[in-house]
Amino acid sequence: MSLTEKQKAFCHEYFMNRGNATEAYLKAYDGTSRHGASVEGSKLLQNDEVREYLTFLTRPDRERDKADRERVQAILWKMILSDDTSNTDRLKAIDIVNKLGANYRQLETPADTKANLSILNLDTLQTLAGMTAPKQEEVIVSDQTIN
View 1: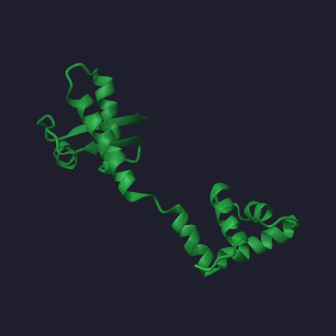
View 2: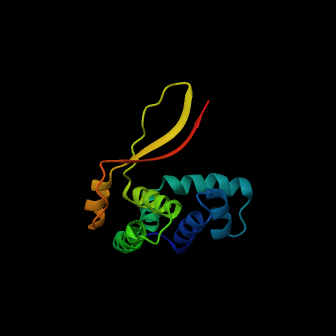
């Protein structure tokens, strides 16, 4: 990449300002009017090298994230399987493990029912976590309001 220092500064500011090109341009390029920053910031976002650098900045460290996720899942599984864990805490732990594994499946509900139902397949979670889970076919975790 052959970005100038100001273009790199713009990218870092854009990332830190959660996608506000005008504010990022104002900080990276001193002495610019707000209108000018809006126009020029928009132009910079069309630059292929700038977009590539922004993609690089927002790319997660996948190995670190995977290790952190696995560590958290191991701790949660210990909570789930422990006899000392309350049912409320166990359900919260199951919910978090399920969210980490992206194993929720939305169920179709009747039109007159407002519900957010999710099914947790313990066999799937057991496989993902590499641990032994209680033998049940399914546990339904539900936050629902029925009219």
